[in-house]
Image (cartoon, rainbow, N blue to C red; front, top):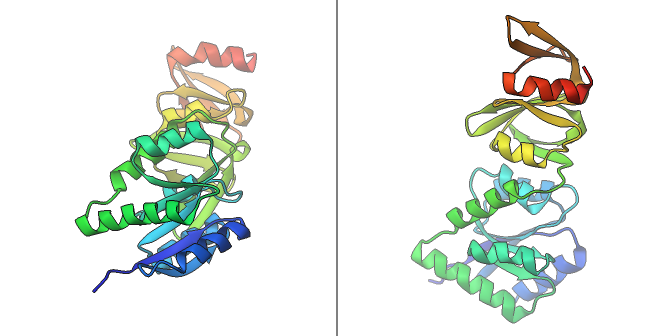
Amino acid sequence: MKQVLRALIIEDEEPARALLSHFLADFDIIELIGECSDGFSGLKAIQELRPDLVFLDIQMPKLSGFELLELLDEWPEIIFTTAYDEYAIKAFELNAVDYLMKPFSKDRLRSAVDKVIGRTHTKAGVQPQLQQLVSAWQSEPKKLERIAVKSGSKIHLIPVEEIEHIESQDDYVMIYCSAGRFLKKETLSDLEENLPKERFMRVHRSHIVNLDQIARIEQYGKESYELLLKNGNRVNVSKSRIKELKQELDF
């Protein structure tokens, strides 16, 4: 009996969803179980429907394809649909993941689906390649405007200006903001690279602070300092960073 792949489309543009759905109607190996117009509904659908295969758009306004993948505990097979340029496509090719460059033909779609079928027959998943791709995206320098985190069944998009400070916890970071605190699997170094330099500073190997949230610098002992933040939290400052911090704050 031929295996049928239960597939989900996550794409914010209706014409693109319609075209992909139209193409897939001719694939007897594919059972289309749903279509989602944004990353939030797509994440919920993946968790509830547990598809074998997801056609995932990268550039979506509410929650991007990469942000969605960050929030999943387990990944189905993924075929990315993207309008990225040739340089970004190199990342997909280097990590051996399947992608469809918009606009794509039915033959190109069939080629991507055949690759997925081949992997499912040999039980060779694409999880390590996806992990490498997501990690590369996290560490790629970019203008970070928000951070997506999951708390229970809820998704929070934290604007960077609402972040008070960030604390390293091994392979995770704890993000403190006006809405509470949230744990995210990411490194402090990657966040340091992408947060706005004029607003955020790494003051300790374990802490990044929003400079606007500093109430005062307090000294205890001969060469030890800590920050009192406006929310009442206290953050240690390393000796190597105190001079730079005082210069930044004009203290």
